[in-house]
Figure 1: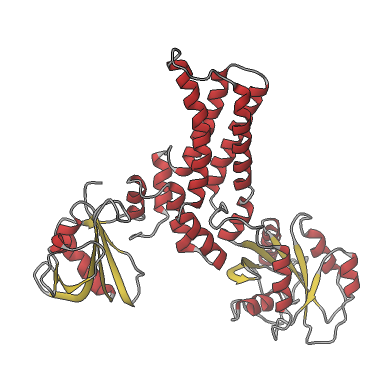
Figure 2: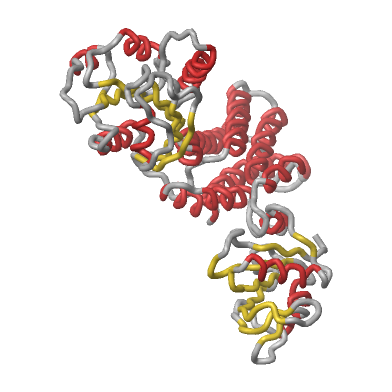
Length: 456
């Protein structure tokens, strides 16, 4: 990490402000070579975290922009290294020329996530905080923002560190007794470890229990919109989205393939999947669409069965209902509420499916679906901000730690030798270390930071 890196830290389009970020031992010198403050202040002598107004020039001395510059020296900067930022006008060409000027002074292009990777390697954040950065960037709901921000402040890492420290105390005591037998150190009392191990297990289980909700929070709920042809599935998709995403006609079988869109609705992100109408057909293409529709159902976390309320239930409606996996939450959308109702709503109750009436044409009734989704997928019980686990890697590591603590507890109860108990506790420490980054494989670390955008 001895080289100095730079990248555009803002979006690629035209904007009011564009930011160039520089980090490394030569950051200040490189910035000084292309920037002159109006007050004559050299960046080498600049105060930390103070904005300076001045001229940004290219290698041949031509003026690129009048901008602001701020210096943040390590180890108190984001990366733990010396950092400089130019806050320029947001023209992509201005930012490109600024980078070109820096590259001519020995700076290289930063790789995706390299700034955050350096922050992690320099101890400015643990791995749970680093992963929270990308979660915050990709957050699609207010709850996802709040949770990611809490993790960025260390909510998950601090709790895991507390558990890690309590288990480490047991390991330290064991080695102290073995290595210093002549010292006045309490001998092994393995039964005394039980309370610590049980507390660790309880805390780890509490954290792991948040993962399913966290997965929904981060990725959304795959929501399959199903039904026989011409009940209004595509119209309902368009009504939810607020624009015509899917083609709607009176001809059966218009939708031949699945269409996917995301929407924030009912307090959660729904990954809406509009599917082909479920019916028997001789069309090879339509058959493929029906098979994909069935596949979408089996991979869904929520199913909306669209029925035509202006007609009695068809056999294909009953078949569609029976095809929904029993463990998948579902609701019937009785469409065309703007027309006289001909569907026996009591029959839906007898069939064990909740329903709401809606007009995909006018949007009337969508507020009922909003309320039903909030009821079916409620916000989690009170959990400290940032302590909802959203990351599969962290979830797996915590699960492995729980398994190791369970083995240690079983060993204590079986009165095995202390060194055998220690092996299980050390395995738990390793698993927790994998979650926080105390223990890190290079390939895993590379994969994590590859997900970041350049400049972060």
